[in-house]
Length: 384
Image 1: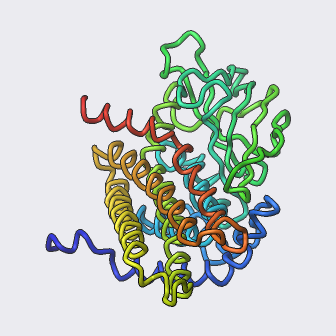
Image 2: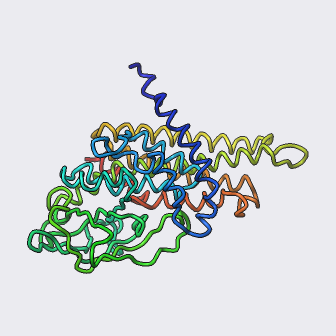
Image 3: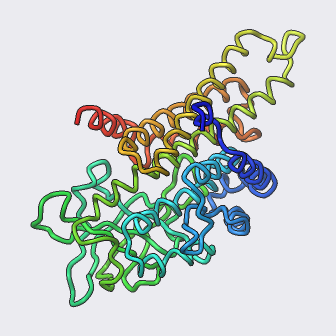
């Protein structure tokens, strides 16, 4: 392998991109505006992704999945996000919710929960944050108390993506209240049908309206002992290790949103005429487009480099995952804002998808760790 090969995706990756892009444009894009307007889960997108094995491509072949590598999973998310950010959360959240099992679950737990995810029979969500424990995850109050050969779960979780739709939830809870902070938390799989488990009302959000965001409520939910993920006390370590990998998928989502906005802006400026010529012929417009494209490409290359590190499990993944997520989400916000500007008054209306993309882009700077937290993660890596 030459050095140049390191900076080029494989033919298989580009073939995957072409297939996902065709599916997204034909089966997902036509419904994106309606999904946003009605704030409804994009079931049509879910069905299309399941039919093509793109809903959870990361699941290993040994557990019924397609075994897509980290870069391939990012390409799927990027191409779906290019037309509908809400729909791109289907593969992204499925990876986030189930990756703790892939990384640290027993073979029994994997065999029980990963095949239904791989087949599309069940979706997976991830439950870490609480009302008073957002960035400060170690201060969580949700508690799992030993009970015979199992546990009893009490408390709540906030801001849970695809809550209510997903069948399975990886939930983090304090299992040793008197233990050292951060080493007293464990991870469990909770099933939607478990008695005492319920959901709060859907949050009314600025963007990604097709992905339901709700609280999880636990009222003496009994969890069998064989549903623990990893060992007692390892939960937060597993959760943070998971985020090192999945922040790369949020970065991919951000790149997809930005690329979609740039594509629509380019199509518009080629057609829109003012002062007797296309507005694309004005140098000021060309400079804006060049800056937007340059930002998207730098973000994409950072995401792909981070995805390669995720696949290899490199020691500096925490830095690159945080950097890719932080940079790509900032790019998505800037590029979608500029795209709205390029369309002028039309960009501000729902006749074009740019205002939706701008609203959707904002969350990428917030979830899976705010960009301020990403800078903390990067600084810690630099200074350790």
